[in-house]
Image (cartoon, rainbow over all chains, first blue to last red):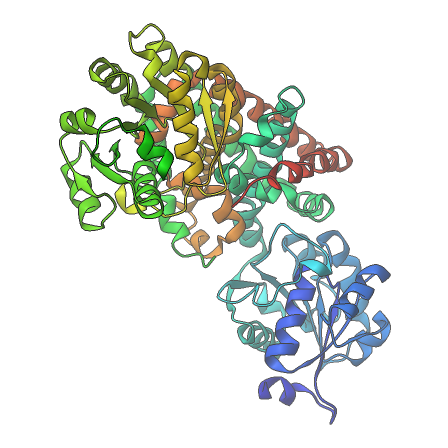
Length: 296
Length: 296
């Protein structure tokens, strides 16, 4: 905790301000205020979200955004990705050289490009804590959501060193190791290991729902394997459409490659080439290696 | 327990014989012998599996298949689907009119068609307990795997009523409700809510592994969302290729529809038609309704 207090240049205790109290902002607040004893202020464009966050004790205090930006040592933007650019541009204009603005968006190329020439770009840190669930809003906030997982910091060379170090310490305090990547690498990689999984789930859900129109019994037959692959189809369409939109090129590439693999499998299945499709499945088994590194 | 003992026509305690002591056979044995106190005998074509099952105490005794078939009141076939037809044909020839043979395969049309004219078809019950994990072999056996889940019985009109009732009671005793379906309905439905999920996961794994050849860092970035959608890609290729092969027509149809949905999504994404793809995602959200009925 002391490293955060030291950062504050005034005598008052350090304050972190979180804009957007949904799954990410709310979970972040729960960990910071309860584990670190840091004062967390928050605001949300939805008065309903603010009310829920207050009644669930997710945040220490709800204050207007202007006041939050003025008062907070660290400002965290946890809003949907299509709102980050406008919000960050405006907030960066008004912060001083001791404050830090961190975003937590799931895409990074567009936001980094948008802020590249901002006069206060050095006080901005482009972060992406790799954690989430299929739920959204303040009620989805979970203690310990980030613990043991990874945080990506992009284009850290454009941020002041103290700002990057403070960000890494902030995420470290809630159990996250930070890695550095270029924004382009980030968006390409995430298209494959996160965004594609969401498209895959949404469309799997749609495929089964279409069959259900004629076959009512199908909901009796769904089991845990189906649940696992289709869970992400419960995610917020608004949040994820914004991510797909911001990362359309890479998501498109990943999806095209996925469709190619599925089409090849279909061709082999219909041609009765069992030895060939079993070979593809054996290669896919190697994904164990990647999964072994994930803390669930 | 008494309803099983009553079924036994001799003075000796009832015995259930399980052929194939993997995930399904092993888990079934654990529940039956520990919860119901029924004697369970087992055999497996793999001496290694038999040794593991014995050392882990999964089964009461390992005996040769011939003896198991001769001695057991209920014989459960828990072998991969491509072995069921040959095994069932041979076992049915040698059982008496008090014994029951139950299979647990994930496809039902082919096995039902194969046994349709067997002289002892009436002593066979085509079952499919809807439970599993991505692991296989006797070490994957889990207590309580079946609890709260569903069992399907196909073409029960071709089985003796006492055999169907005994099967339903057997699965009831380990926490499963039994439903009746035609074999054709079963295979079509399962293609969509189970088999397709496996193809989807295997190919998602392959897509990411292919990128990993050039992008080593990707394994650092995989998170729980990816884990969820790709978990089934760890499943046994042999077990699942046999299922895809036996249910090739329905799996092919399901996969084709899935590819069509993905292709439509890709088209909308690349045409920047955000309002249209967000609409598809909203429709997919309705999968919550199906998932709410699944006990995880």
